[in-house]
Length: 305
Image (cartoon, rainbow, N blue to C red; front, side, top):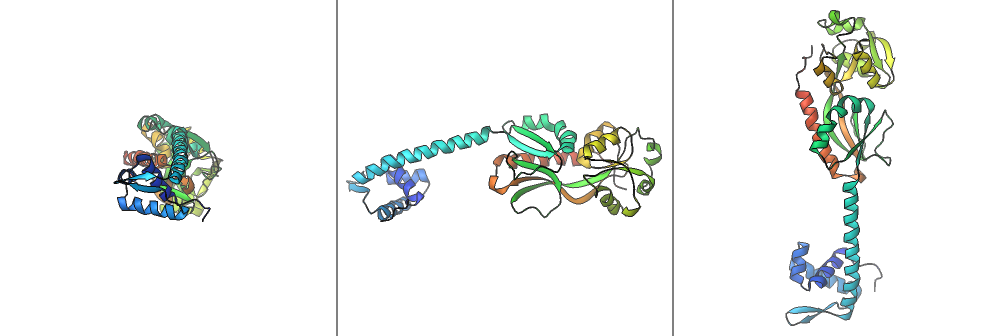
């Protein structure tokens, strides 16, 4: 006789049959056929080496062994149902913690946060800002919103939201604004360009896409993070390079202009979450973000030169 637990399906079939006192009703509740339940009951009796039911007229009657197993299985399944319900509720009640860069948080997310909370009131989104140090594999984060290039990590479920588009921007307050606003992209080869150490390839990538020699670019003031770079551009300190979504509000308000348009890179804005921690809320959030980014993409913009 085996001392291992019987198959779970067999125990489920028995618990339902004993509770409902009917194979047919157990089959209906478990969404299987009458024959499937009967086979599971037979399998369970063979596994245990005892009879659990005897026929009584057209129905079934539990044996002494069956009554003992009924009481034990009823208690066990009820406890399982209770704990599963608690776990489901605690997941639903827990906030969804999303990591993203401070620049993305401040310049794109926060202006839309009220709309997100109204559209997804059950999400209970908490935002965690960082610069290159956020990893959804670590405890405390449910997902990460990041600009990155494929291939994607094998242990991540990745929702691609939008292709990255970058372009030079400047403020009307910049002393070179009148000279540059109608100039071709080659005019930027004579400028001391604002740049950031967190995205050193941004200017070379844009130059290559614009058929310019990246080696001839000249760099001026540098900043550690993109957020500071864009604040410097808004303040009129020079021409900066930026992902389009992060300057969308500034372009609408006229704080920045993008005379040379935006170019696609190999990167995507994507939502990452560990496959081991798949959360249905992530799919809702990904769809909402995709819709918002689509609206940003459809807003009026200057054409690429």
